[in-house]
Image (cartoon, one colour):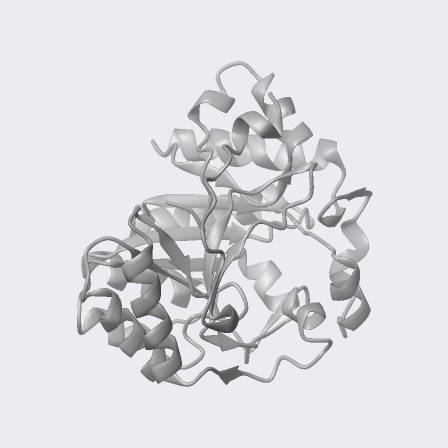
Length: 301
C-alpha cells in the first residue's frame, strides 16, 4: 500500500476563499496519511490550556482567541456554496475550538441550514452544547475530543472532564446530530490499558458515536518550542514528517488494543489521525485488522 493509493488526486479547484476564511488543507508530508479537507477559519486561538496543543506553535505562544467578522464569514460561505458543486465538509475547529464563541458558531451553523449540500464540522473539548440541543440541525456534525481522566488531569487544563464531554456528546447525539469522537492524544501512561478501557466503557454506556478517530502524541517543532509544560514529551522515541512520535511498536500496540476492545463492543468505524503510511502498512499485515479500519478521519466525510 502506498500513500498514492490512499490519497486520490483531487481535480483542480479554487483552494482559498475569503482571504483564508476557507482554505483547502493539503500540507501533509509524504510519509503521513491524512485525508485532505476544508478548513473554515472563522476564529483563531483557544481558551483551554492543553499542554500538548499545537496551536501554541501555530500562534507563537499566544493563543488568545479572536474571530473574523461574522458578515465576512457569511459572505465567504455564500461564495463557497455557489462554486462548490460537490458535497464537502468544512472543519471549523482546525485553528480554534469550535465552541470558543458559541453565539457566532451558532449563527454559522444556521447558515449551513440554508443549503442541503455541504456540512459544518464542529470539533471541541467543550461541554456547552445547549445551542445545539435547543435547535437541531441537519447540516452540522459534532465531534468531541476526549481523553482518559488521568491524561485530562495532567495535561488538559481549563477543560471540562471527559465525563462531562461524553455527557455533552450524548445530548447532541440524542438531538439527532451525527456525533463523532476523537480519542486523541492517547498516551502510554502507567496502566494505560486499564485507563482507556474504563474510558471506552464510560463512552459506550452513554452513546454509540458515528465514528471514532484515534491519535497518539505528535510533537511538531514549533509546538515544542512554545509549550510551557513539556512533561508530555517524555514518551517520544522517533521522528516523522509530522514531528516526534511514540515508537512504532508502542503505537501499534495502542491501535491494536483499541481495535480489539472496540470490536468487543461491536464497533468498527475507526480511523487514525496523522499516522504514518508505514504504520498503516504494519496494521495491514495484521490479519483481519486493516479491512475494518476506515480510510477516512474525523475531518473528512
